[in-house]
Length: 104
Length: 169
Image (cartoon, rainbow over all chains, first blue to last red; front, side, top):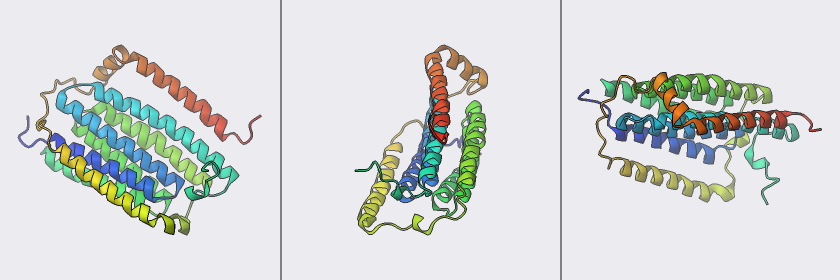
């Protein structure tokens, strides 16, 4: 193999950094769409670790798992965006703080 | 050589991910997210997972982001409301504490990550990550999760249609 191949820790660090950026996005932003995009960032960050472990252990299970993660992400996005549209029809805003009907 | 490819792509991905959460317009966020997906597919190619790299482009950068753009255009979210960035006073303390928590968790995770002993990749066969290998694994060992995933997608499709209908009758 190459002498200067990337150590596994660097891939995992990239994954952790992207995951934390996603968490910060969910916590900081109040725009429904941007919160949704932050969730997508987190799902992608997990995929990086799965595939990096695959590459370093010569397995294919992680790639199957990331395939399943993509299926779940697609399902989640389609249902979530439908919910956003239904919410927007009842209350024309995208600010999460104004949706508190089920909160208390 | 691999390091020379890895670091620019990783830096680009992190910069674009920050662009997603710090952009004031949702359309700009979506564009940054598309760029991040493409960068991640480059990382997957670097890890020799070609099938997942192609899926990343087709599903994420293609299908999911088109759906996001549809909804952004449908809801007409041209400018971010100025209230989008205002933190409520009673939440300031909690916000600072969660920021500290996020940085702390990141520090601890990276600390643990660097204890790993896997520093050089396994010697991979030529068939690693190809459609044939993944497909064989998917239709033999993982055939039940595969079918369950198809049910999940069907349920999501029906759910989206029912939710987005103007009135239930």
